[in-house]
Length: 83
Image 1 (spheres, one colour):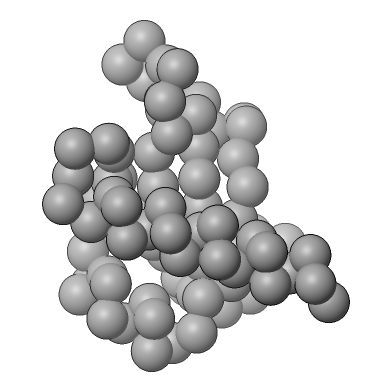
Image 2 (cartoon, rainbow, N blue to C red; image 1 turned 90 degrees about the vertical axis):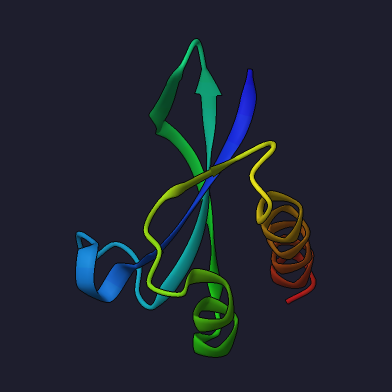
């Protein structure tokens, strides 16, 4: 079992349950993304634009962007907990 990340715009692609730019972590298992188990953090437009470059692909361990996304995800979780 691993983690995979997706950067996406909830205003454009969402179902109304969240808003703005999102970084979502999913479970990756047996070659598939388990989409019913996830956690999202909101991103600023600046962070999103710096990371996404209009790229809506999945970012798994080994992807060059993965360590940055992991760090940003944890940081945003900690900031949310502190509110």
